[in-house]
Length: 98
Image (cartoon, rainbow, N blue to C red):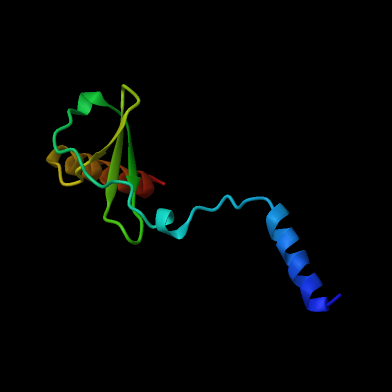
């Protein structure tokens, strides 16, 4: 038998029986989580806020509601801007105290 043929057959066997990769395709990795945002959301509905900053997407804010639903919140909302300012000031003060 030809050595090249055996090498190709061995490579095909390895590929066929190799475990599938857990990595996401590049197109899914680069997508932004928030495609649309909510402009009106009472603060009382929110259980938790997550802030996501990725290189190819704008700043994104995800709110987990008390109903366990997740929605993207417009980061330009006034109450959210004030919340972020207060959080930053609180972090600065705690660093100065240490």
